[in-house]
Length: 70
Image (cartoon, one colour):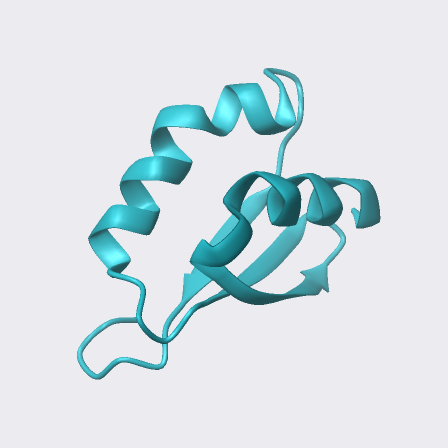
């Protein structure tokens, strides 16, 4: 999971503020305060196979501090 976390941080760069491993196959990505949640989701969905590969199973949660988004 640490390797996956590093790959996600490298790819998403300024879109996220931090990461946390929540479980054996679950990661939380804390979004940057100024980042638009819809944009971050679209970027991640469009490139997920490039980032982690087709055979990797993981639950990736985008966590925002903005009101009305979970």
